[in-house]
Image (cartoon, rainbow, N blue to C red; front, side, top):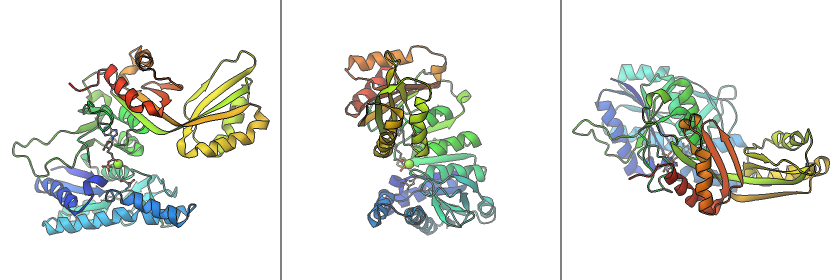
Length: 416
Ligand code: ADP
Ligand code: ASP
Ligand code: MG
């Protein structure tokens, strides 16, 4: 007997037929004698609709009320799945974030989970063999008692947090692909499913745009040593006759991975905008004078490139989240007089393509290979940033697919 968390994303619960399919996956594990907590997302498209209604109600709205509205999508799914499970003869009960409770801070719209109480769930596993059906994406702030949400894609994090709280043997993330691929399989048909991927690599993949898992869920899994398995809810739900479960991707410690590729995957993010400050004085304190006000305005600066100056003046280029692009330009215009530069230029139609792999720690030449391959396709690189296990390149958005496919193939990741 094992204790499992099974998480089902939006596409997997898109309508009643799909919810019945999910219930069959759950029943398979219950029939095998396992203790099961299920975490569900809102039905596909419903969170977007709820977000849009808030926006239409008032462009600038109270974040606490936004959370009340958008958390409702998950409530519907948890109730429906509990009903369907009961109808199939499986003992089940739904739980909202405030009922368990799942305590979070009060950063409404992007709250962090602080503590999950799993005691009642464990008691019910033992006493009634009851399946818990938990609404993902939502928590409650202990002091105010108000509903919070965990940021888009947050049900992944709910699932990992519940898994840690109930000491689950495994956290299975069921989605609309059968695992983590070398890159988004919707962009590169030749992408390969990875048997295993190290926590650190998955963290980079998710942070750099692979939205298959929310970044925080990977952080939490790494910290709490939760074994996460990504697999497809579209695989046959009933127990296979040969006893072999369909494969997925296990996210685990680096030491568990024997296959040694230098590059594990390619990620890309369109959530970037580029800003360039022209002819700024090249003297101490200038970077602080530029980036200080941006930090004060809560704008995250990512890639930074600065030239060596010949005449005491230089150009500085950096990226910000595309949602903060206009605001960043305004902040910079405000400090223009004080800092002294000629112009702020920018581009929002850019994409950050990243090459990820723990093998980079010990292999030279990974960056050079990328530069050469992109140059041969006539793709210009606007900015570069690197860390121990990743290289990110900023390019024109029009070249996204070409760049991702080129890099995927040049590092030997193509299938077949
Ligand atoms: P869910 O609704 O189940 O949470 P998401 O849409 O959040 O599902 O995440 C699954 C999607 O992530 C896939 O449909 C796929 O297009 C996308 N994706 C991006 N990068 C990858 C990758 N490297 N491997 C697998 N899927 C990826
Ligand atoms: N329903 C939420 C969203 O669409 C949370 C999730 O699905 O993980 O972002
Ligand atoms: Mg998701």
